[in-house]
Amino acid sequence: MIRSIIGIFLIAVNASIAGSFTVFRNVSFLVAGASHSALAGAALVILLETYNIVYINPLFGGILFAVLLALSAGYASQDEGINTAIGISFAMSMSLAILFISMIREYAARVWGLLIGDLLLLTNDDLILMFISTIIVVSIVLLFYRSFLFISFDIEGAMAFGINASLLNYLLLAIIAISVVVLLKGVGAILVFAMLVAPAAAANEVAKKVRDVFIISFFIALFSGFFGLFISFFFEVSPGAIASLTATSIYFFAIITKKYIH
Amino acid sequence: MYPVVLKDVEFGYNGEEVLKDITFKIDEGEFVAVMGPNGSGKTTLLKLILGLLKPKKGKIAVFGVDPSRDKDKIQNFIGFMPQKEHISSKFPILVKDVVLLGRLARKGIVSTINEEDMERAKEALKAVGLEDLWEKRFNELSEGQKQRVLLARALAVEPRILLLDEPFNGVDIPSQNKIIELMEDLTKKGTTVIMVVHNINPLLHHIHKVILLNRRLIAFGEVSEVLKAEKMIETYGASIPIIVCEEGFAHPLFGDTHG
Image (cartoon, rainbow over all chains, first blue to last red; front, side, top):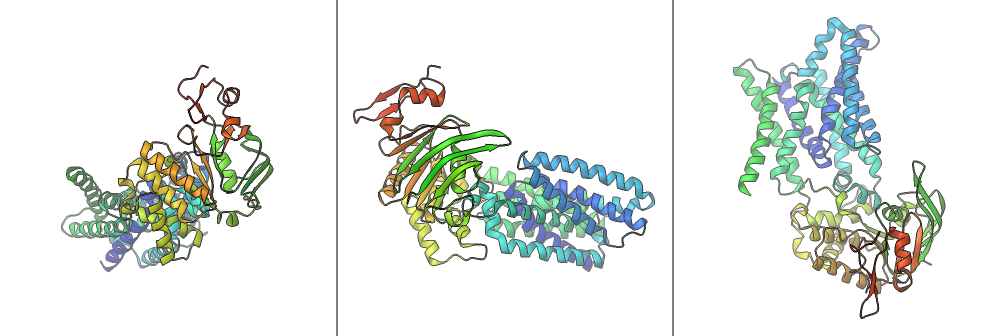
């Protein structure tokens, strides 16, 4: 239970920070691509473990693959649009995930577990990795906050004013990918998109200024996570699924409220 | 020392030639318009001056500095206003944050806003006539107001050279006139202004020189020397009528072409 609560808190921090920049930078599709890429990376680690080659948390493989996808999508987007690049990388990483799963066989359930996730099954090792990843994400964003804001607003202008926009763009995509992996074990690859993007998207609809987007999205993600956990005490349902449904419902509620007010 | 000098500059993307035989010098305090059809290399020219692109051949000097080699140094001289279409309005960034972005970018990663930054930013916003919109959200502004805020961002860094890429796109006439008046004031104070435009007519009475571009330099010089029928055909591939107004300026009549 304590682990679930800590996990939800860390998820909310990532949803706030990385989720908000995902919306600002308009790279929501990256989250879907990175989550499936992370699945491929985790599957590879589990595969190597069955052959006694490595003994590490599969999430390390997830981080590696997710970041690689983000960087290669960033590179390919210089010629093609970023969503096309992500789409192709997405397809490639799903193919790899299925390939590795087919080679794992008896341990395939561990990989399928990452597809669906479970807030109630977070281990101490998972939390340590999630915590360290979150510290990395928060530190980098604090250091480069204004630069990330600038490249999200106007990447050409950012370059013209002396920002190394290319490098910072890669860095931003990489930390979004790391955040995706933080959420992976808790909510699963399928629902990462909902939990990372929906709170920030909802916050973006109602916030009066940029700082408010971060604050509001944190509380939406936190509330959604705790609500999911709460419901799972009374009904045998996935807390991650309830959390994601809550977050996405809040998004649609925000859209309708904003339209109604206007 | 000339603020901008280009000599025999050539540039291309992926083997395709984009600019060739570009040679001109722009003097301090000159207001120069850059014209040409779509794909003629106008934005590329600005990016070469900014040091964002490196020429394949030839030399570029901004106050004597090669921009592609010493980008940091020349960015202290230049303020840039990009095309509005590249701006994202997806989040509730405030006008004051937009105007301050340029100054903060120049100061480096670990920098804080000080009183001088706030003062310069407010002065820049006042110069474009939008001081009342300091706390307003950028995405709530009209297109003309957005352009003026982006101009304020470029002005806030106190540039010696101002580059503007199609500043009048989607902008109403009063906002256009405000921008032109401001440019004239700046050039009188010694700032060099280079402006890419599609329609030069609003500027004609205010500019010193014109560059006609169509992947190569067709003409560069004073308005009366450059805006001639044969030069316009060479640039646009179509005959564009030119009429001379009472003040003696040659106005090309875009929209009335005979191909």
